[in-house]
Length: 288
Image 1 (tube, one colour):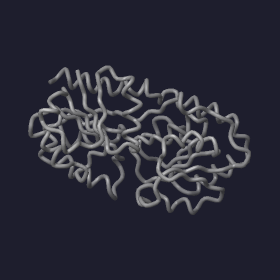
Image 2: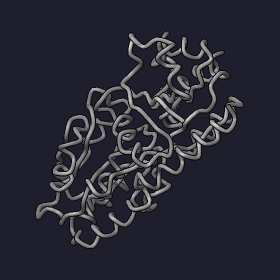
Image 3: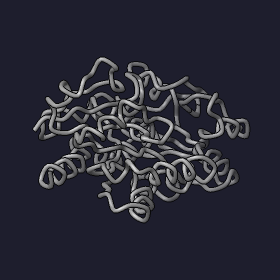
Image 4: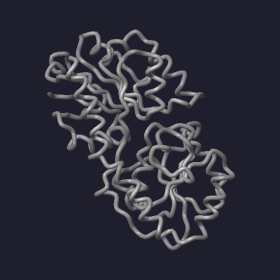
């Protein structure tokens, strides 16, 4: 069976995930960025299934994508958000699910368990948990730097989602990288002692996985699926715990934590994660 996977830009997390997943998928998958305006229904008929692997929120859907559903082409849509984020994602997801076109989907791909549970309460369309993964061969562990340094990656222009303003409370040197330039990330992780996530919202964060595979402990807000793979003591709900843990980590030898972090990343490899996507595609094909 042949699948067209559509993502939202070459450098996006969704595109990175799909590129790494494809070698581990059972079915033939081609990757495209958005839906090209030159694509015709005849071209799309060359595929047995369209998988839209990005946010899938109402404001991201174009008329071309809705036209595909009207033509009866089988479609799986992705929802890559945080189910409990009330200020933005909740209202957007509610609008998305309330739309008439949703019942025409063959399945909804959710980035975490809480999102699947929430979506399942709003629609009868089958929902699957399909998390992000990490290339454990590309990201390799290395000794921590001599000087304690915290790392953060993202865009400060979306501070309301990523919590950029929270970084002002940190009492230690901070190194940050704008966006997530994939070819620069291995060196970035080598240069830091600890990776920190201060986001209000995440779906299935890729940077957490990359940092762990690089042997770096991750201190994170309770977002997305982090509770599925991070130790509870690495997750914080208030700034006091965040600063207390950073204070402790700054005083100890972090060499032993390199192995701990790396070990946590093994179950997050793309080879393992691909099983969730293969199961979703198999179920959909079985019911076509």
